[in-house]
Length: 328
Image (tube, rainbow, N blue to C red; front, side):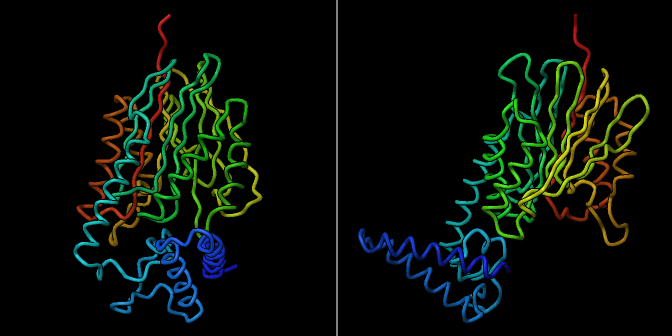
């Protein structure tokens, strides 16, 4: 099924529900919304869906993904419509930022620090941390990246946030967690919508359980140096039936694991290409013994120096976790 066929099916289903409501409620708002859905279906059938009614250019894909009824591109919005959209985006950004857990945490022999930089007002990068409710339970954290940018990516990110929180019970393995999340996400998203994710559980003795859904490989800095931690698994939402596996690490005091989204390693310039995992590992090797906040700042600074003033093209998340000595 193509993306347009999926949109048509969703609009037809929405129309059926609105029509049944309008028969009994007959509110003007419902009738107007029904008219807009009918108009969108006509544009789909006529091949003009997604075309701006004013300039005849294209309506932005991320806005269409969030609202398939749109008929005007950003450039053609009236001043009052632009101000209303800006207010909505600012409010959404405040909500998204409020959902983030603390950016620094020390718990039961673990230290965690986060650097989170959206490309625009809203981010498609995902980060969450769940403290254990009992002493024998692990600290649970995830880093993810939703395909796309802007409003549509942030909407899927918020959905993923709620979904993972609902599923992340301590008695559910990380492999089962990703399997269930993948199935549910696949059932409610468009075919082009997916997310990569790396989930981790941190146990008191230094054990780290990892599971990857197509996410960039984390970097481990220990006494043997710096190396990527291999992992496998399809991104969430691509195929409803997918299997995931877990991997265990053991971190000694002072060891650091760096998780990140591809906005770091895939930052690029036309002249130099991508920043790449090789440069990422090299900077981590130089700064691995610094306090975590300084370590993250150095990783960001190295990327910015590589870009030489060129703008980033993606959201950026860096998360460092370190095993610290526990006082007896």
